[in-house]
Length: 414
Image (cartoon, rainbow, N blue to C red; front, side, top):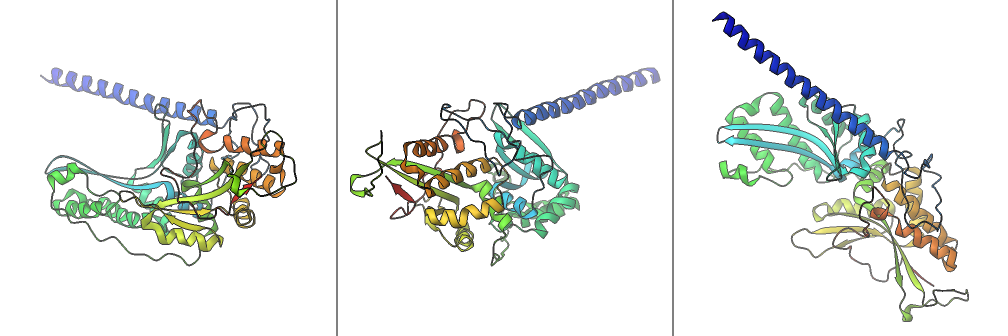
């Protein structure tokens, strides 16, 4: 009997050893492919590296699409400002509580801090991971997505919570963070293992993000959501927070439209091959849920220009902050982002946007060469920037279209 028992234990030990070895191999292989993907993304497909964001690459009119490199955006020595990280999290981050239930009295509570992006922006996730020094990055090439995720309670308590306590979020996401932090504290004290503690966590979970999932409601239909904490907005926005926030939820657009005949601005400059003329518009825009209306109005105060417009959409009420006056963009927007860069892939869009603005200011748009240069810059910005043969689609204002300001002060005719 002892022989059979020992043999059984040996076999179990042997199979566990094989399973653990395979798991280790899988993790190493996954990290290797992630490293290969990161290296491929930080290499310019035309073998030309962007050495400095201050000196953008000039492109020839003979090419229809341009490739990009993220090398200049996320060098190993890039040091992110703490307020930039908070601003980017206000835009793209998520404080997650996941409840798994197999029955009424069997549950599991998982918590995480994460940032989900398109895979083309994976380089900035590596910079954020270096900033925090914890967490992991996962990518899914089939879905063109990547995520930076911190799941260990020890790291969340030691690194993530202290950061956002010292450099606080200022969007409504701060409410989620405060409730999430309370859940983590309870989890760390093992209070989630008791029914009483679990019910308290459920009430906090119900007040966060999208509320209670249908599966949880099925088991606990009478959950009462906790009150969401209140907080005050700062009088003055931190410049680095502004750049981080716009790097996530902002955008730069160049719009070229045929002009209307009754809006012609007379000019004595010849316009070969485009006699009918065009109207060129420039916009910097930020879109948020209407619940962050007060925060969006803070951007008006910060830049000293622009307006906030509201979309008439009952299901997803939105507000858009838009700056479209050329002088305001030149005098207030460009100096800000020249001093406080966006750091992620959107920095390339900003550089193209800036280059087009400079052409406008020099009246180069009145010539065929200048117009074609602006047109090329516009055609290769945002989602149209070539990346792994992704379908090219237009990205102007966010989905649904931003509200248009009367008078279009950012329009130019020729």
